[in-house]
Length: 250
Ligand SMILES: NC(=O)C1=CN([C@@H]2O[C@H](COP(=O)(O)OP(=O)(O)OC[C@H]3O[C@@H](n4cnc5c(N)ncnc54)[C@H](O)[C@@H]3O)[C@@H](O)[C@H]2O)C=CC1
Ligand SMILES: O=C(O)[C@@H]1CCC=N1
Image (cartoon, rainbow, N blue to C red; front, side, top):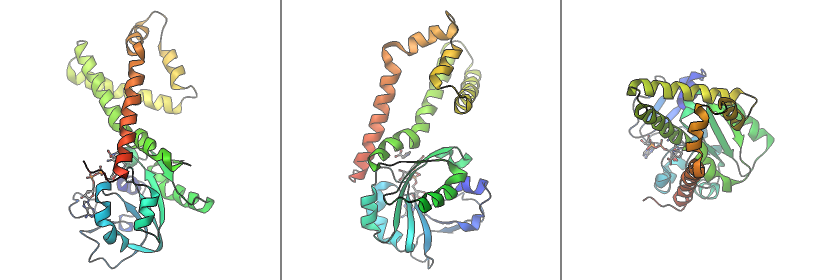
């Protein structure tokens, strides 16, 4: 997220990072190893620790909040009820970004328990450099949002790896297969994001009657195996969010 803001020319000195060990941080941002020696209080605090650490760190985090501050949590699972119990005076918002925030291409699922037009406008302007803001009306959906939007890149990267492996097994040198898998995925994703047709329509356009794509899809679509795999994958990720919300650190 920091990289996304800096790439959009937000001045580095705007940011105070509180992290005991983080290194390689961009030049110009303020770095604090703990909030203990930090006098300042902030109007916007973004929480990016592991959910399992929240209970331990909440008192320290609380001391960084100015009166009426906005606390934006990107923690998987952790509910606004839990956050509000730790930070009763803050305006609590849940945000689910992903790695592509660094290039301004993250879906940004946002849930706020007390939602209003002014808050939506503030969040839209704050988050615009990171990607597309998608307001989520029901907090119960946030674990599924996390599975799809937050964890999703890892699933796509696995798919790209599998394409590379498949290309290699089909006879290509690994480096060529990897290059083709990546460039093909990039082009296909950009096309799907910019075309007026749905992905289903686009797949149909690729598929020449009796051709190579039809032969491949006959395998890929058999027994809805891919759909079942994705359903199970997202369900597992979603359910882990619910476990994290209950404080399960295992
Ligand atoms: N990795 C991802 O793509 C995404 C992660 N998230 C959420 O972001 C949070 C962090 O996840 P990751 O970045 O993957 O984990 P991570 O382990 O890479 O990051 C945790 C950070 O917390 C810092 N930290 C540890 N103790 C601290 C303390 N006492 N005070 C301040 N900072 C402390 C660590 O040094 C580290 O920089 C999690 O809540 C996760 O659910 C949300 C969306 C996407
Ligand atoms: O793996 C996780 O728990 C975090 C949340 C979404 C992406 N990474």
